[in-house]
Every structure is written in C-alpha cells, then in structure tokens.
Length: 157
Image (cartoon, rainbow, N blue to C red; front, top):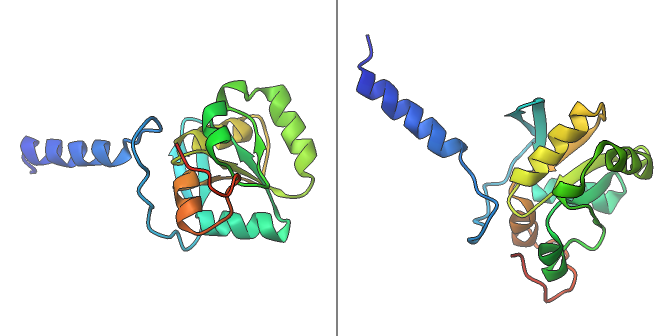
C-alpha cells in the first residue's frame, strides 16, 4: 500500500504541472509538439498544435487564426493573418460568424500562452464546431518559432 505522503506528493506534482497563468510574466517557449495532442477541458478534449504547425496551416491557407487576447495585447503585437476576438467577447453568435468566415479551414485559436485559446477551442467545440485547435505555447511560441509579428517591432505582453 502506498503511503499517504507519497500519494499527496504525486497529487501536488500533478496539480502544479496543470497550473498555468495567462497574466503577467514572460512566456517560456515550450518544447516543440511533434503532433497534435488532446488536452482535457470542461467540455471535452481540445486538440493542441505547436506554433510552428499553426504557422504552416495559416501560411498554406488551411488554417483560420483567431487571436483571443485582450486589446492591449493585440495592439502590442499579433500575427498578421489573425482576426481579433477577445475571449470575453466570444459568444455563440461570434462563433457562428467565425465558423462561416473560415470556410473549410481549421479554426486555430491563439492567445499569449495557450490557456485562453484552449478555453476558446473548448467553447467552439461545445457550440458544435468541428476542426478546431488551440496553439500550445501561444504567441510566445509563435515569436520563438520566428513567425511573423505585426507590427514587425511588436512585442508579446
């Protein structure tokens, strides 16, 4: 039988590993994600892709990039091809508009670090949208991958 202390240590480690913040601090680029992965969310599994894969999808015309960060974050620096819909403004009606605008492209959500984009992707899935992904590592990984930023001298806040 395992000791209660060992079980608590494992649970604490898992809880800390699952924690993430999208407020303040610098983003540390995550390891490259070789293939899409599924992350558990309140409404099911959200598929995450690397920033490099997201950039390739957008560049090839297969991805429709939606930046769900706040206005000040968007203004400081964003992907040139992205459309801006702050997470707080995401509604069933907005999701329906995004679904129509993307056509047959994958709906790719991005934020600063990947937390809010995962929430947006989960909301899209809960609304019945398919072919939806979240960018793991967000704009921090986007910039680290050498992908374009607008303005060119912009920054990620």
